Image (cartoon, rainbow, N blue to C red):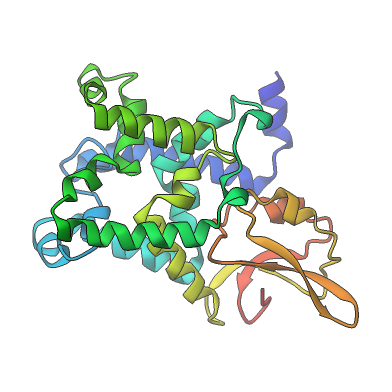
Length: 285
C-alpha cells in the first residue's frame, strides 16, 4: 500500500519518466530487449552499441555497425534540440541502477557529484577513452563499459547464459564498480552516468551547446518568478543548480548544463513554478 500511495502522489513528470525508463529497460536490456533483438542482438551491447563509434575507429564502425552509429547521432541530436531525454529517461544502464538504488535509504548512499567535479572527471574520462585504443588496450574499454555491464548483470538473474560474464576478474570488477559502488550505492543510482560514461560525456557537451540557442528546449529558470529560496539546489541529485546574484540584491537559481541530467525533479519541487521546460527565448537559464 505504501508503494501504491507513493505512486498516486508522485508528480506527473516523474510518472512519465519512470514509465519511459521501464520502456527503455524492456527495449534494450535482457531478457526481453525487444528493440535490441529487432536489430540482431539480445541487449544494448551488440549491433546497437553507440559507444564503439566514439574515437578513431569511427570510419570502420560507420561501415560495419551502421545501426549503432545511427543511434549515437540520434541520441546526441535529441539532446541538442530537446535536452537529455535519452540519458535520463530511456537509457537502460541508468534506469536499472536507479530503480535498484531506491531500496536503500539515502544515508547509505554516496553523493559523488558533491565530492568530485563531475563534469571535469567525465570529460577527462572521455579523453582517456578515446586515447586508450591508440596504445592497444581497446579491449579493456569494452570490459569496463557501463552500458554492457549493467544490463548483463541484471539480465543474469533471468538468463543462465548471461551469468558467464561474472566468471572473470575484469567482469567482477566492472560489476562492483558500475552496479554497486557507482550504481546502487550512489545518491541517485547513476554515479556511473555522471562520471564514467563516454556517451554521457558527449551527451553533456551536446546539452551544453544546445542550451545556449533560443530555438532549443531545456529545463530552464524563469528569473522573474524565482524567489531564490534554494530548494531546487537541495533537491537536485547532480548539484546542477546554484543560487547567484542577479543584481539589486535579488538572488535567482541558475542551471549548469554541464551537470544537468534533465530528471526534472527541480520542476516538481519548485513552490513558485519558476522552473519550466521550454524554449531558450521563453525562459533563459
